[in-house]
View 1 (cartoon, helix red, strand yellow):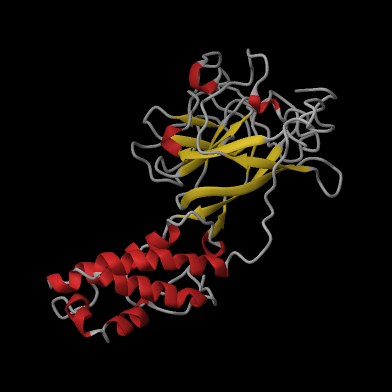
View 2: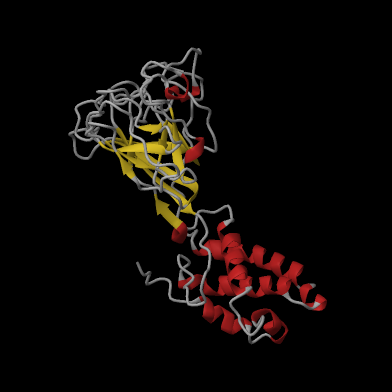
Length: 356
């Protein structure tokens, strides 16, 4: 889909760079400016996106997903996520309007966990979800046919006749088996059509392409192959066997775009950042010059450009920040913890008085 905010092409940037006499040898390698122009442009876009700042133009919404019984990890049909930014959870089956919701906390990493806790005061007992992303191949998956085997799947593996109930519209979170498995050929499968398992496990062909669908013998369920190098989500605390169905609405930053053609626009970069991209492109060109005296300009030019990105950030940083601190305890050390939040631990009224 075209983006009306992105009309400047890479060829426009190259045309400006070619007006610099000392950069002509870089732009016209073997009579063509295709290379290293594409590499330089990709380097610049990566450098812009590497800044510790969530650019609005590079923001993406993750696919929605819903909590499942005892399931901590959720593989997604997603291959463009670079980092998580923010998000909320919605008590999706609640009949009230508007529906209750709560914040999620974005973290870098979390250990695998189960739905039970043996310690005195788990940090995740506060009524919010903590969320991080992992490559799909590092999430955990169930094994079909081993119902009571623990380990990665917490013992809720599907077997012949297992019923998967759609969580949307249910009065309570259905007691479903784990909704993602690794099949006998090593494919990662996620359930995409609810129903009843058949007499045999679903198995896709070896190295099946992401998006391939498969069902076991006699099953009404459908499983879809997920890209093992895509991105998925780990949550904490682990949902219980039944209860509230939470819909996760997460926002992240996309992987930097790579350039493959001079006719390609700078999308998703908006036209208002053309000068920022152009200056970075010219600075990077110095590194690729065949002449030493021109290459010597690179370090200073590139460093000055990196510093100039603060000005570009200011274009997207004019609003008041919406994030906030939530005290764990009152000033005198008593009272509940984050009692204004709705979350999986206390989905309706928050923690009991005096809870720490």
